[in-house]
Image (tube, rainbow over all chains, first blue to last red; front, side):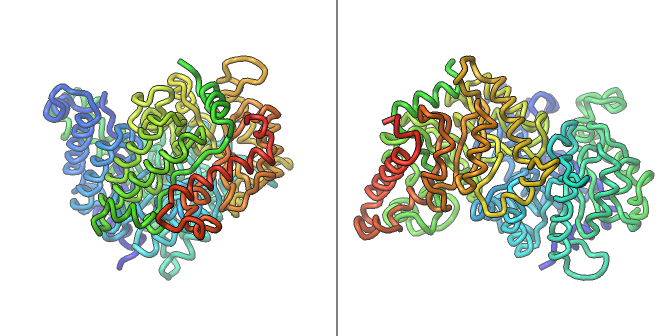
Length: 314
Length: 314
C-alpha cells in the first residue's frame, strides 16, 4: 500500500501543479445544455442529481489531464437527499477512474465509534472500493477534541487515506472562535500543534515526509498561513479561498516548501463556473462552457506557477 | 407555522418526559431476528441498510408512545453509502409519522452557501416534506465561526425547525479545544454566549420562551452543564451522555428549569440495545428485544422524573 502523502506528492509532480478543482454544483449556475440534457424540464431531486452528476463528470473530463486533485463538496449533493448521495458516490468514482486524488469536503466530526463510522464510510484511501464513498481523503472538524480525531487517523493510516483537519477557515468570521486566545496563543495554533503531532506520527519517515494528517488553512489569511506552515512541517495543507473568495497566488505562496510540495490550493466557482465570468463569458458564451473551464484551470495553474514555489514543478 | 421551541415544549408536556432515544444502529448489536428477517444472510450495504431500517422502525414503534423525541445518528447510515442514506430518510419519515420530534444528529458545519445547502437538506422544520431528510432539528458544529451558523438559523426560523450547536460535548477529550481559556474564560462559554444571542433573537417572545437555537451540552460534565444552563436561558439543551457514557439523572438535573422544560436528555445504546444488558437480557432474552427496549425506556423516564425537575411533567 502506498500512503496518502506519497500518492499526493506523485500526483502533484506528475501534473506539475498543486491546483485542486472544487466540485460544488449549484442548479442555478449549471450550463443550460447540461440542464436540458438531464432534467427533462423537471426540478425534483432525482432530476437535479442527474444534472449534478453529468456536470461534474464533464468537469472531471476537462480537468483530469491538468490537475492532480478534485474536491467534491458533500453539502450540495446532500441537499438533494438520497438521489444526491447516489450522484456524489458516482462523481467520486468517476474522478478516481480518471486518476484524480479525491478529497471529499464533508467536514465531519463526532466522538468514538461514531467518528469511526464516518471514517469507514468516506475514507477509502488507496482502494476506491474500500469505502462506500470512495474518497482518498476527507476534511474533518476538530471542535470535539483530539480524541475524536484518532478514529479518523487510524482508518486513514490503515487504508492509505488522508485527513485535512480544519485549522483556519477562509470565511470572514473564521476568527470568532478560532482566534480565542490563551496566553496570547489563539485556538487555531493549538489545533495546529495537535495536527502537527498527528502528522509527524503518521509520516512514513525521512526529514521531508508528510503524514496522513493535514490541515485546512484559508488563503484569505496569508499571515496565519505562513505561521501555520511553519508550525506544521509534516502536514499537507489544503488551502481554500483562492479566486472567488479573494485569495491570490501571492497570498498562498507561503503554503509551499521550496520544492513546490506541501499544499494543494483549491478553486471551486472560479473554475467550474468560469463560463459565467469574464473574460471567458465573452470569449466562449454559455455553449462552450467546457472550454471556459479548461482555460480557467490553465490560468490558475499558470498563476500558481508564476507566484508561488509551485513553479519549480513545471 | 408553529416554531420549534413551542412544538418541542408541547411534545415534552404531552409525553410527560424529556427523554430522547438515540437511533444509533450497529450491525453487530442488532437482534438476530431482525438480521434474519432482512438480510438473507448477506452483509452488503443494501442488506445492512434494510436491517437498520427495520430495526429503527420497530424501535420507533416501541418508544413513540413513551417519549417525545428521537435522535438518529447520521454517521451509522452514511457508513453504508447510498442505501444507508435511503434508510436514514425512511427512518426520519417513520418517526415523524409516529408523531415524534426528530433531531438529526449530523454535526454539520460549513461556510456561506454551503452551510445553507446543509440546512436546506436536513432542516425540514414543521413540514417533514420541506427537506430531503425531513428532520425537525439538526446538530451543528460552531468551529467555523458565528457567521457560518447564520444560514442554519435563517432556515430554521423560516421552517419552524431547531438547531443544537455543539457547546460542550460528552467525550473524555472534550476539553482539548473547548476548554482553551482566554482571560480565564474557556472557549465553550464563548460559544455559549453566541448561542444565547441567537436563541434570544429567535425566541418568539415572553420571558420563558426558548428560541430556535439550542445547545449540545454533555451529561458527563455536570458542573459545566449547570453553568451553561445559566448562561443560555433561551436555549433548549440537548444533553447526550446519559446512561452508557456514564451520566446519571442527578448529573443532568441542572439542565432543566423548575417546570421540567428546557432540555431533552438522550440515551442511545442504553435503550436501543437494552436486550444485551442486565437485567433485561436475563429477563427477556434476545427474542423479546422490543420488550427490553420498552422497559429500558420506561426506566429512563422514571429515573429522570425522580431525580430531575422533569418529575413535575408527569
